[in-house]
Amino acid sequence: MTAPLRLGSLTVDTPVVLAPMAGITNAAYRRLCAEQGAGLYVCEMITSRGLVEGDAHTMDMLVFDELETVRSVQLYGTDPVYVAKAAEILCGDFGVAHIDLNFGCPVPKVTRKGGGGALPWKRTLLGQILEQAVAAAAPYDVPVTIKTRKGLDDDHLTYLDAGRIAQESGCAAIALHGRTVAQAYSGQADWEAIARLVDHVDIPVLGNGDIWEARDALRMVEQTGAAGVVVGRGCLGRPWLFRDLAAAFAGEEVSTLPVLGEVVTMMRRHAELLCQHMGEERGCKEFRKHVSWYLKGFAAGGTMRRSLGLVSTLADLDVLLADLDPDEPFPVAELGTPRGRQGSPRERVVLPEGWLDDTDGTACVLREDSGETSGG
Image (cartoon, rainbow, N blue to C red; front, side):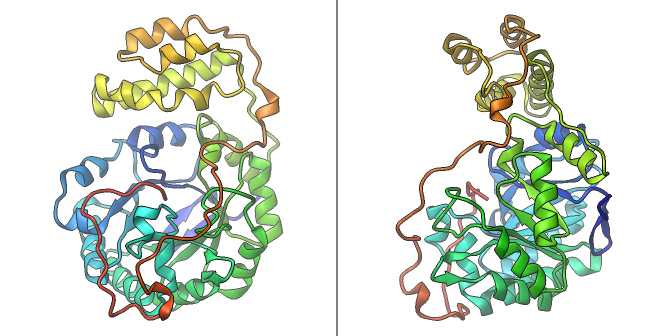
């Protein structure tokens, strides 16, 4: 049995964190995953400037389910002042119990402004952001953590320095995605880097990357010494993965292989929760993106998939789901295989001009949009 994850005053009984994913980890999806097992479920990434300036889209994203007792939000920012103000708003106005700072997003529109996975190159700026965020959250006893990557590319690694700076700044933990920004989501995650970071810092390290099944999470913890795991793409269309993870970390051998009828029940529940939070029209539109993930490997034909991808009401969804074979077994060939985006490595990381000239960053004028960024 694995020990609980301790983030300052916050204890997570099962050391599993749902990674924030843009357009995915809204209140409905977090509720759906929470119904399957224990863990910490992080809201979609929001920008600090958007929150401070009251951007309408940001506020729409900052919604919690009525049963979401532990509110966790990932915050993106490049300005220490904005990040600190945003952290105080989250703690004081929204009752957030955990703040995670994003320094791992590989999306070019983020890195070209020096944000996300690009920012840890500027060690001094990173320290200032972390120190001010921790100070803003401290009066509320809210732990601050960070998520980062190995570095910009193999020639510009930053994760060991980021871990040291996070520890010195008072962060409660650091999560490491074992890929560089240049890799994005391609290739294989470097778990050895996670192990090196564990040896390098005294604060808890969470491992992220290539966790497709519960056994992968156990293997990562065993191989790296990580205090827990962060799960992203592996749960797309498979929220029951959190049930398997809870069982695995409790020392039980449980692997969920639902027949199609059970998957259909999960799909219907997901759509229902989306409609409850967003209204039926928008909820059904949001559900469409999940159809291919739920049905991955099943025999549902192209016509059925296209129809489900156009569904606009729960009644229409019920009619279509009723035509699927409830007894079709789970496609075991899909176990342990990547889900969601993968893509190819980038030849170069898009950065602000002169970004690599120094590792300070305090003189940089970084532009942070008030709207939301994608990625995570």
